[in-house]
Amino acid sequence: MGGLISRRGDWRLERVGVALDTSADRMSVQGALPRWIANAWTQEHDLGISRHGFDDGKACLCCIYMPYGKSKDEHVLIAEELGIPDAHEQVKTLLETNDCVDGDFVARIATAMGVPFEPLATFVGQPVRSFYQRAICGGLIFQLSGGSRLGRTVVPMAFQSALAGIMLACRVGQACCRFARERDNEHPPEPLATVGIASQRSESKRCERPLHLCR
Image (cartoon, rainbow, N blue to C red; front, side, top):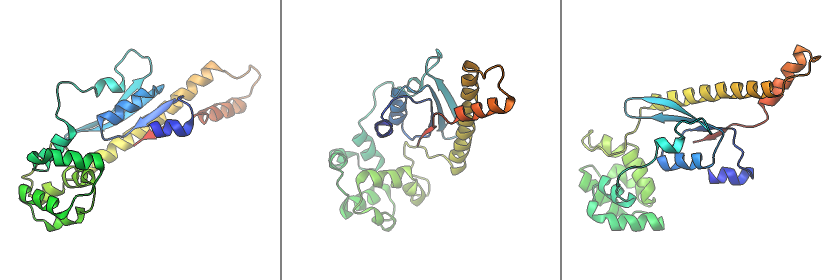
């Protein structure tokens, strides 16, 4: 989100469509204080869209993703899900330095998970975060283990993500029309203006501000 703001050069965001993976990223979007946000989300058994206005007295996007309680550090969680909880310091170093994993590291995880090494060998030479995202979050180890190895990350079915994206696009389109009508009401055409001129004014106003999609 910071990169988008830097390229724009201002913080005036009328509408933002959000399709992000982490709570932290969603909270950073809310920190930019858009006028209106539509947030697409998926869970294991459902999906949906939440709407958040700038000053409507309701929960903002940050509110519904605010962390609560005490959680483990990221490197500890990743080490546990890779099946090597005692190697959390090594995982921490790999994350901080963005160093690539070697064959011994991958082989150790394959042994701990009880899966063959060969399908994981393609990750040798890649950063540990990429390895984790594709092997654990992507469901590779889950498939190789026959479903016996479940991580904490729940990966939605492909149709869930697709449907959530369609719903998000529809909701944003609906909002664009509503904001255009609001602006037209604030600046109505002159009494002598024809219907055609009024329509042109309305269409031009719809294009004044672009939609920003965070994904």
